[in-house]
Image 1 (cartoon, one colour):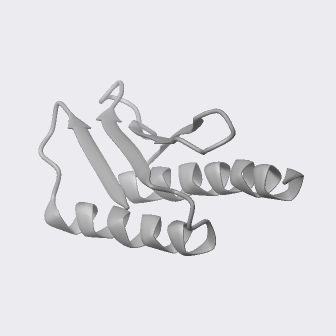
Image 2: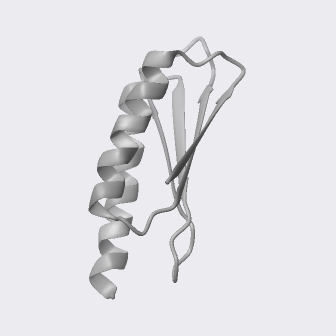
Length: 97
């Protein structure tokens, strides 16, 4: 499984990278067909409180690419919210098979 993390206009910390990898590993354990997860992180409108955006893109065999984008106060929270949204979509796809 490959996790591609892209930080736009900032340097990502090792702790954040480890956090994302750990969360994605949990998702892949539930859905072993996942080969690639693309994570894009960016800061939007720096003057606001909820300005951290995480976008997850997961190609799924036999279905469309599943994408979820969430904005929160921290990148960790945004990643958690996006993973929850993608997991909900994956559960629907798995249930339809």
